[in-house]
Length: 147
Image (cartoon, rainbow, N blue to C red):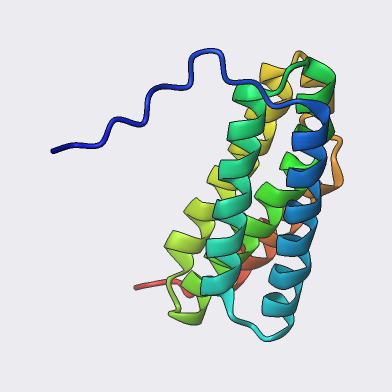
């Protein structure tokens, strides 16, 4: 017999719920910062994907746009860390093409974030996009040329 858990119609995250999720999100951030120091990029990817899922959940269910924004404002930073971890994993395997694709994808996701929120003017002004663009240029310059 299948268990029915219902649907999410009418489900709302109140301020207190969002605050608890913020605390948990911060704990995960501390953990993936440690994983970055340990160069465990697989764990960083896992934790950043987990936080992106929480961000999506909050955006969908927060009782107000202000509450949703209290979490969403950190999405560009999270996307940058996620992108760096994924691309670094590819670089460890000398897969420059995959790393370049992942960085371009990460830049695109950050730009989409601002575009979707009506803040297109910020798309290329953020430190996250700038950092990834500089890194992309470095990796592209270092990519071995096949003959």
